[in-house]
Length: 130
Image (cartoon, rainbow, N blue to C red; front, side, top):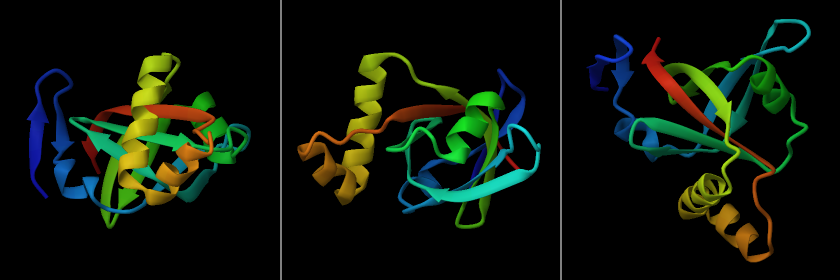
């Protein structure tokens, strides 16, 4: 994996192209009440220096945890990436994330034909390898 420096944040930036094609990531959030780590497997999409996340169920623990505490860690086939998740509220950006996920995952593409779309989307920025 190639790592570059982000002058704006002075952090080691991961080469996201190396993980973009992987099928899943494991996200670790901090419990909104307990503060304990909570890890689950999720789908993700990469575009440029940003990782996008989406879920059909906005009530999942990881979604509520990331909403309360945006510091998250993603593990993609042994590559650990730390960042900050922020909720996407712009409808055009949400539509773009839906399209990215549908391009990557056939099940999301099929779901889009039936009107299924992520109930909650995030972008993960300020990335650094750990």
